[in-house]
Length: 395
Ligand SMILES: CCCCCC/C=C/C(=O)SCCNC(=O)CCNC(=O)[C@H](O)C(C)(C)COP(=O)(O)OP(=O)(O)OC[C@H]1O[C@@H](n2cnc3c(N)ncnc32)[C@H](O)[C@@H]1OP(=O)(O)O
Image 1 (cartoon, rainbow, N blue to C red):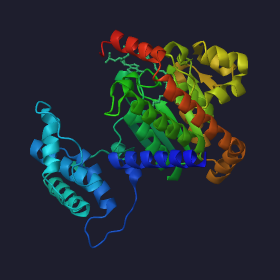
Image 2 (tube, rainbow, N blue to C red):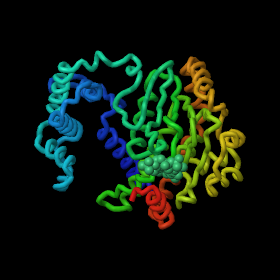
Image 3 (cartoon, rainbow, N blue to C red):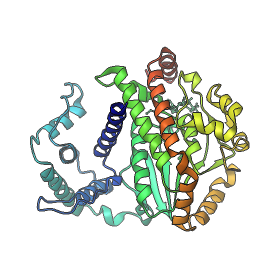
């Protein structure tokens, strides 16, 4: 058993590291000091962010050069199979990366910084950035993260997909939580952009099958799910959900790990797990019966009953419901006042309230994730997902 536990932890640790190295996000902030080798990690990350602020498109040739240097600086020599002849874009990217041969990572980092610096001096982009935009943290593609009034706001930002959580979004959320746990905010808030809070797991996550086949896909999914939920279990500051609209699946279950849940009266709460051939996650098999009693938890988690905001409030899942017309104003006024409370007192109170359950929650998360790993391979689940995807003409 000890060996299994250790390899599981190693696997999760490996996975998180892989995630960190594959994304150019500010949460990486490793602050490696400047060495004789050239640009520091901080200079590199800053250059990565500056690229996104360039006003003038540098053109495809330069973009390929930037891509290749970025990959070389973060992953080393090209290590992926050559894309097919007709996969033109990926082939061009691969060629550019492969052309760098064994260029050392440090040199690639320096070359990247130099290239960006040259591009910046021929562009007046940075002086044109509006003060508003400074508040927004760069580097995230699926989230908009802002820090203001001691509040870090993490907004799910795929409104066209109802904020469905794709693999990238799971990874970016983990990085955002890690950064928020260390920044100078007192509370951290999740919300959604557009009309939905979130439609839950992106069902197209199931379509991208790796060389190891569906078993490997399910295994990786279970590791990602476990790491993702662990980040919520361990998050040290008060965590608030501002549920601006309907919430589905995993975006509902993890609410049991939040400290405050404010909902618009437009919000609904829906966990259609059985319909999808799946089972509860996000520790909801434990938190929901505890919060709302067994009978109501069963109605939601087994029978997929959709709750209105009022019902969710009556059952203790939601802290307070606000009319949609005044939702944003009322909630943010409240949160701004809360954010001025002493940071350490809030953090320690959260610890006292939550710590004695942490170990249990980690164990439940591990169990739920491993059960889902099996479920994802079942005919019931495969058929339900295929059904959704074919209805939406994704196949
Ligand atoms: C690492 C893996 C961890 C997994 C953890 C396990 C998690 C489990 C869950 O979260 S289960 C819940 C999964 N979610 C769903 O079943 C919801 C599916 N979506 C819908 O039922 C509907 O889209 C809707 C009710 C949310 C909204 O309906 P409607 O208002 O009619 O809008 P559209 O359906 O047209 O949606 C617009 C656009 O978004 C795409 N989309 C919406 N939700 C998802 C989704 N969950 N996954 C993928 N794509 C989604 C939809 O296909 C449309 O895309 P299009 O414009 O057609 O390109």
